[in-house]
Structures are given as C-alpha cells and as structure tokens.
Length: 491
Image 1 (tube, rainbow, N blue to C red):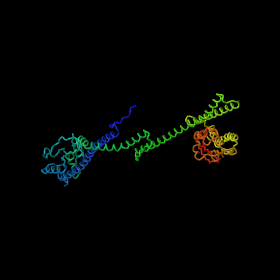
Image 2 (cartoon, helix red, strand yellow; image 1 turned 135 degrees about the vertical axis):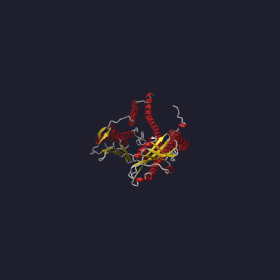
Image 3 (cartoon, helix red, strand yellow; image 1 turned 60 degrees about the vertical axis):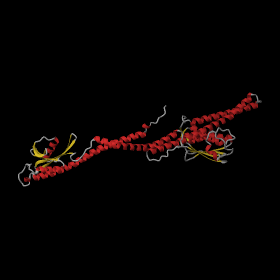
Image 4 (cartoon, rainbow, N blue to C red; image 1 turned 90 degrees about the vertical axis):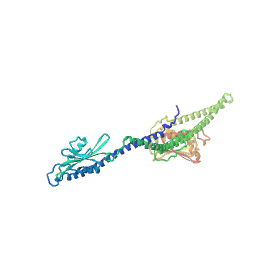
C-alpha cells in the first residue's frame, strides 16, 4: 500500500480559500444586481407618484383655463385647445415636471411640442402604450404604464380633464424616460467588471484568513492523532472550545485516556501471564521432579526391599494425582474464562442448593475433625443459574475454609432470611490484611505451607460468581477466622 502524500493544493485550506472567494464574488454580483433592480423599482414608484401629481395639477389647471364656461354655468362640452399662451405654458410645465406633456381632445387630436413647435396633430400614429394610457384616461382612470423599447424604459401617465359636471373633455398625457428623470442604470457587464475588480482581492484575503482560522484546530488535532498513532497515549489536545472542534477534541482525549488505560491493562496482563507461566512451571516442576527421581531410583535398582518399592510407587501415584488435579483445575478455569463457554442455566431453589452443599461440606469437615454448622433456612429463593457450577463455587470456598480451620473449630453455612445471600464463615487462621486482595489470584497460596493446594480453587469460584453476577465480599481477622458473603442477584 502506497503512503499517503499530502498535496497542498488539495488541502482543506486551499479548498476553503477557493470556496470563500467564489462565495464572496457571487455575493457581490448578486447583491449588485439586486440593488440595481430594487433601486430601479423604487425609483419608478417614486416617479409614478410624482408624474401623477403633476398630471393631476395640470388637468385641474386646464379645466379652469381652457373650459371656463363650464364653471359659468354655460353649456360648454368641448375642450378648446389653442391660443398664443399655450406654447409658453407647455414649455413651462415640461421644464417644471421634466416630462413631455401632450393634450388630447375627444377627437383624439394631440396638441404638444412637435419638431420644437407647439402644434395640433389629428389622429397621429402613437405607440401602443401611449394609446392604452390615453384610452384609460378617457375612461376617467389615472393609469401609470412603464414600457421597455429597446434599452429605454418609458414612463407614461394620463389624467382626464373634466368640467364641473365631471364630463371628460380631454386627457393630459405625461411621458418620460428613466434617463430623462435622472436615473442612470448601470449595465450588468459594468457591475460584473467593477465587482470583480474590487471583490476579488478582498475575497482572497478574507478566504486566506478564514481558512487559516478554520484549519488551525484541524492541524492541532492531526498532530495529536499522529502522536496517538505513534503510541504516545499520554498526549492530550488541550483544546477548550464550545463547537464541533471542541467536541471532537474531547472525544480524542477520551480515546487517548482509554488507549492509555488499555496499554496499562495489556501490560498488567502481560505481567500476569508471565507470572502465570512462572507459577505453573514451578507447580509442575516439583511433582515431575519427584516422579522422575523415583523412576530413576527404581530403574537403577537403588531402591531395595518390597516396602520401599511400594512407598516409591505410592509417592509417584500421589504426585500423578496431584498433576491430574492441577491440569483439571487449569482446564476448568480456562473454560470459564472463555467467551464461547456457555452455562447450563435453569431455575433452581437456593435452599435446595444450600442443602446439597451442606451434605458435601459435612463430609469434608468430618474427615478433618472440624465442626460443621448449617442453619436450615425457612425462606425460599427461586433463582436462575447453573446449579452445578454454583455448587462448585460454594464447595471450593468451604474446602478452602476446612483446610485452614484447626480441628475442633467451626465452619458455618448460613442463608439470610430476607435476601438471597449465602455466608460461609470459619474459625481458622485468617488471612493477613495485605493478602485479602490477592486471594482470588491464580496460584496464590503463600499462606498454605503444609497442605496440597493448587491455588486455583478461589480463582475458579470467583469466575463462576462473575458469570452469574454474584458479588463476593471477604472479611478476615488473623487468628479469628474468615467470612465469605455471596450476594445472589434476584430473579
């Protein structure tokens, strides 16, 4: 597998720089286009109100000036357009409003400036938007129409001229362009060029700054990850943040702690394994040496006499049985510790189990002369577990208690009345305080100097208890005895 090569131009920092630059440029362009569109829309709305006010004022003025008879009660129904004063009037209002003003009578004759001279043209050919605006004016409405012709946007409004009887005598038409109103629209190409010219350098600087700020914690986490990959499990990020990087750093610190704990555990297991092989080698060495020495003596004819030969055979048989028991205990402990080993669980009565254990314990105590006491329980506890294994667990502890209890003293087996708790108490030699934490270790029998003991009985008992969820508590006082308490989980 080829090693991973870090490519700067494909790094997150460069990708972020490009992303920030593109986003900032797009933001600038979209903002410019939106601003231009909204400004034009707002300007048109403003010009609409202004032109309609101007058209209304002109229409009112014309109603009083061109058709005065209507206010005198005369039957005047026609708009009279003409007179020498009309030209200066139109020039004045066009200069005042910034729009081209036309007056249209009921015969659709249009009066206004044409070729620099005020004149009336009969039924002229007008653009469709002007015709539409004039028609709406004669209907008594005040429309405002915007129309695009090529690149030019035209704004047009009309206002009816009425007499005192609200009869339409004509229409005042105002038209202009956005440019004539003072609005200068910037083209999209100009916006693009100007935006790129100003936004690109800024985008590059901001992209570099933000990408560095964003990737700095990633670089720190990468260094920590490399340190952890190199086995430096004591390394910590030291990062205190309230964001996703802080959460990731916290997770990496937890990972480092667990890796460090796992390494310490592996080291402990390695030491235990070395100790185990050392102990088992020592345990096997003694009986093998005895058996070999006896066989060599018998083979060489050193031992003479039938009684001596029988004694040698008896010694070898005893050592062989000891080896067999040791191997059986090792296999038993190995099976219990295997995740593939399954217990034969079923419902059982704890009182019945206690009675079965009491019968075997009584025989053990009788052979050594130890007094055995078992209070017959009245309570019944129906539990779930492997009956045979739990019996083995209790007998292993009782056997250990009998070994270290002098003849004439008691070993007691008790079941509490209110909870599924079994107590095994002896009046033996007790356990030194420094050894209580190690009594369940394999081959731990330093205090046993006069009895054959594999040192695996309590280790097997603890493993059976662990597989059943049984808690074991040990209390001991030297010279007074030891108490084992087994707390069974209730069904």
